[in-house]
Image 1: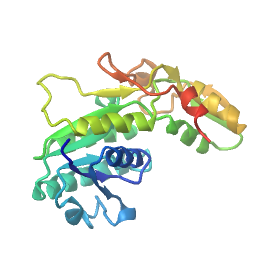
Image 2 (image 1 turned 60 degrees about the vertical axis):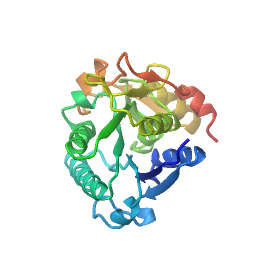
Image 3 (image 1 turned 45 degrees about the vertical axis):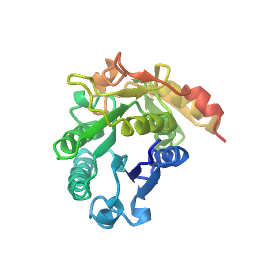
Image 4 (image 1 turned 120 degrees about the vertical axis):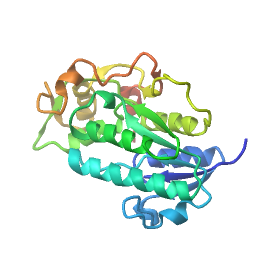
Length: 252
């Protein structure tokens, strides 16, 4: 196996930590890029140095809120900088994590991720995309955002997947230097079973002593598309990893 130098944008984030672990376990060189390591994909600080000698960029840097305009601006700037600085460093490929269903999105964070894909793809360096279902870890975030003692969670269909499973698939894709055949659908990764976000939240809420009430999610961006299964994995998706309940049982 040839050792490859990977630069990981968003290396200290929820997904990035797993990507760094897996690359390290497989014996590759990893340059972790995040503000914590002195590299800022938005201002460009430390970026040229970090990318020197890197062969592949894995982009898992994300924006912390669901505001569409702010997220789009973040992704626009990061995509431009990774392409620009990456080209100067002679990076061969960028591999990015995206979200299943972004191609259908019209509003909210998913629409920002749709723009992110398009912006990265418009640059000179070839880009590979992996679209993932919502992470198991996202359910806890929904409970943390609640106001008061009751969490009102959308009863929308989802196929939650473990972050670790997504990271493994992303690393496999980043190591695949062959260009996909024309017309090949964008690869997708999701968990093994379909459920609703409210059902998953109830399982976690029961452990935390939080009452969860399922709601129709009408206030969410693209709720109708979600309710119709528009953000569920397609027939070509890889289904892998633990179910949400199995994953919960491994938590401390």
